[in-house]
Amino acid sequence: QNPQLRTSSLQRRDQAIANYREVEKALVKVRDAYRPMMKDLLDIEKVQSGRMVFEMQPTELRAVVTAAVSANRSLTASNAARLTMPRALDPGFVSADPDRLGQVLANLLSNAVKFSPPGSCVEIGVERVEERMRVSVRDHGPGIPDEFHSRIFQRFAQADGSSTRSKGGTGLGLSISRAIVERLGGTIGFSPAPGGGTVFFFDLPYLAADASASIVGVS
Image 1 (cartoon, rainbow, N blue to C red):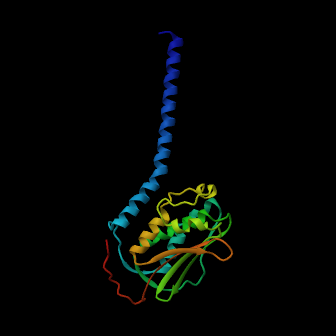
Image 2: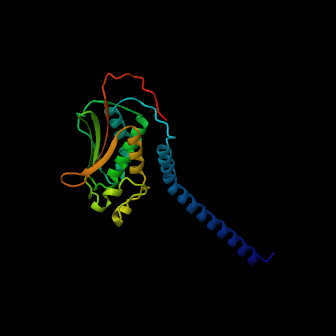
Image 3: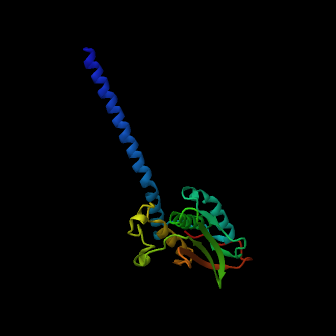
């Protein structure tokens, strides 16, 4: 075989292999990009259809919040925001699934960090409000546009501004959080924060500290 033809053939083969590997890398990136969205879609479908299992138990809210903050500190690496809690959090039990509460908190913390200015604080609180326990997550970001308030807990909800869309995310975290909180018998909401930013919060019915340790799980 002509050496020049053989060399040309090998070059074409090597180029084809290189092109295939680039396509393969691109497909992996697409798969990885859509994986969180697919997981979120499955979660919200399960909770709204009643197929998500909740392991209900008396839950000390301060302990769940403290664990969630510790588990999500890595969220702040991208913009050096800080997760802060007051030393004194109101004590109180709720009837809940600690893992699902952790999921809600992860969504709220991620959302707060995402929209926080570099180096700012994300403040987490736990307080008793009459016969309910409230968890709040306050950021110091730009706030939520008024025209977006009515849609913020809808699926795929994202504010229309380019600066907001550039933050990424599936647009499902708040919708999932609302569905979980409501299944736990609670409510979720938000309000503008004094001095700027937004406070997201959820309330759950207060359970006396000496409540029975056996609460039947729901599915």
